[in-house]
Amino acid sequence: MTSNLPLYVLAAPLLTAFVVNLAGRFWRGSVAILSLGALLFSTISAVLVLQQVLTHGTIHYTVGGWQAPWGIELVIDPLAALMLALISVVALLATFSALASARQELPGREHLFFTLYLILISGLLGLAVTGDAFNLYVLLEITSITTYCLIAMGKGRAPLASFNYIIMGTIGACFYLLGVGYLYMLTGSLNMADIQSILPGMYGSISVATAFAFLLVGVWIKMAFLPLHGWLPNAYTLAPSSTSVLIAPLMTKVAVFLMIRIIFSIFSPDYAFFQHVGVQHLIVWAAALAILIASGLALAQTDLKRMLSYIIVAEVGYMVGGVWLANTAAMTGAILHIVNDALMTLCLFLAASAIVYRLGDSKLASMKGLYRRMPLTMAAFTIGAFSMIGVPPTAGFFSKWYLILGGIEAGSWAWVYVAALLISSLVNAVLFFRIIEIAYFQGGGEHGHSAEMPRQEACAWQLSPLLLSAVALLAIGLAAGPLVEHLIIPALPAGF
Amino acid sequence: MESMLGVVVAKYNYWLYVVLMMIGFYAMIGKRNLVKKLLGMNIFQTAIILFFVSMGAKRGGGIPILDKEAALAGAVKVAEVVNPLPHVLMLTAIVVSVSVTGVALAVMQRIYKEYGTLEEDEILDKIGRS
Image (cartoon, rainbow over all chains, first blue to last red; front, side, top):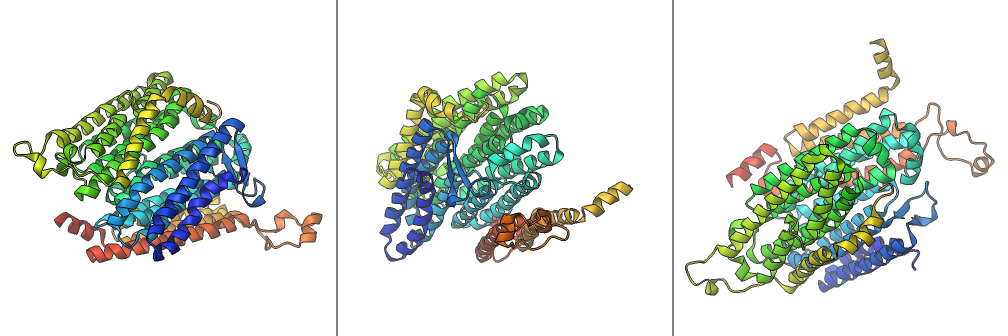
């Protein structure tokens, strides 16, 4: 039982996806029970795996009895186990809200929606643990294809946004595949650990550099690193709320994790960061620019979901920059920020989903007087917003703190990154206080608003995960010290 | 100049894939018709599939279906059989490419129902007017 545990984490949502498709046709209620059951099982297993990895060290799981480097291997190191737990917890929370929104947005098609939804989750979980470079490509495409479909289920312009994402996403995946091809030609292996042990003799070769560049650009497209972010805002804004609560917190964060995997498990930090210092500096500067431009674009938006999408693009800049600063503090910050950002984005998108559920759209202008109408939703939203800004007791403050420490430690060349982080925090403050201003102070000032603004919270399915995620943000913030010590520091890749 | 030509001729297959890939890339980025974009995507993917397939090829290499006894006795010379692994990988990649194409076609149908056209300019026009 315990030895197969890592595989159960992935298998539960995958197999349930097909059962949901069949059973959902006969009895609608089974969709909720089956999806939640499978994800609860995954979550519990993932937490057990995390505990096991933290006490006994990295687990190598051989799939189907074919030994690595020929067979596919799952490598669950502390970072992968952390991602496994993060993905399953976020997915479980998002599912409560998605069940309610899907009933409203896609009546009669919930079983189809949740089939794709569960396959997407098992793809994401697979990405976290796979130790095989080609297997990673396949899982990347599984997550992408299901995401294309889920986005296209939206109304109006959503299919067009989905089509643009298909084109961009395919370019990204093909670049990744091309990089894997180069590596296979050079080493004759697809197993990450095997490639890593063969490559060092060839580090001078320009083919290795080409492979590295293709792999990086591939995942950068998937994570919407700024010059390659064009597909994201439309896709995440126009997707049904039930989709965006899942993909917004997870897709980009998992892609950042893949970048860490590529740098540390296929190549080595020495090769990536220190052999070509110019490249390292260039990428950190690009990340700083990404943060600034995306924050600026977020300021210009008049729609809540679109604004949040641009904030996601800015956050990707934080994490890419943090990883490429290449010191312990920044890496701690980047990994902590993957966790925090997944939860902050989850909290904000759950709130947005609850708002869309009641108001019908997510325009900032229609949010007037929302604090009186949905006080609990907006309270949770405010905590998420404070975390995004980086107000001290919330989780967001601590990862930003580590990122800034890392930026200062890296030396004088990284000042742009530190400045970008600070400016972006200010911009976030402006953004969210504008919303708070609209929702708290505006609306029905002159005439009796209590009559025309009845208190009307989102339904319990949406409210409970939202409140939980807000509490989690506070809890992570308050427990940041021990959390970093026991969870993030062990998860740092070797060499840091 | 002569050596440059030598490089091109010696590795002509790779040059071909580069050209194919750039054609596909251009169509994906530059064309305004969604069907042409999709065709470009297919050309792009095919170029990569060909790249992988030719990676495993060997001059005079045979089919990699081996006699078990001979293989165990070490009588099979690796140079005489084609490396099957890249081909197997590409079976998976073809499946991926077919599924992406299928999804893209389905999405395109929904776009056509919504806007009555697959020209990006006309669609953006209609969005702008509404």
